[in-house]
Amino acid sequence: MEARLGVFLLLLVTVLQAVVQSGYIGCYRDDSTRILPKAVLKDKGMTVQKCQQFCGKKGFKFAGVEYGYECFCGNVLRKCRKRKESDCKMPCSGNKRQTCGGPWRISIYTVCPLGWKIYGSSCYFFSRTMVTWNDAKRNCITKNSMLAEVVSYGERDFLRKRASEYAETFWLGGTDSKNEGSWIWATSQSNFIVTGWHTRLVKEPNNRGGNENCNNIHKKLDFEWNDDSCFKRYRYICEKLLV
Image 1: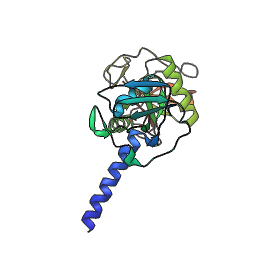
Image 2: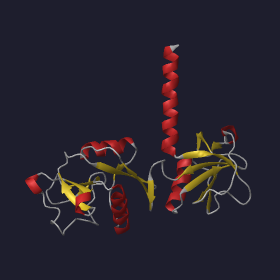
Image 3: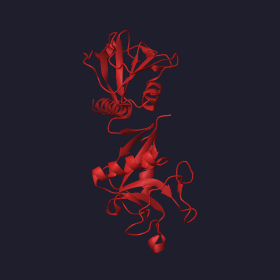
């Protein structure tokens, strides 16, 4: 009995984790006016992820799959009635192990996993725990993501604004550990094309003490970039690409 209970609890936790990661909201009744009316994709290879990516790249918050191969997008959930989960049991045309709504039944998801923030074609997770840079990198990998890499000024400003709202320092994915002064993004191995170093109170990056090889958004430097010891503990930002 105890063994069976243990297996049941393990399966329950696994299912709940999958639901949170996928951003699933529920099964709803749709009609001709459409709950999510802003963009439509019909694809015989439809999957939940394909719909989320399609809606995310177009800048929408919600994605809904219906009738096995249809995808709908929107930013507001219009007045609708939630239905029992068994109503949304039609297999997705591109992955029979997933369900994509049914006839006038739509399975609705957030574009990003629950708790993540969307900007452009990426989702971002702002941690509440403080870890070293290497542990932050590993933690992001377990979330099928990477330590955030900044490739546009808009993205830089978005992350700075969010970090200031949390009023905390956050690790980013930059490092010059291989070649001092040559900063690259750890996951993509690409050079910095956009920077946000603090240069007013102190000129960053300065490699103070000779061992500052990882970069962060620092709360004491007006939430601009700082090079720091990779062994210090800060919060971190994970990035999941919607491509």
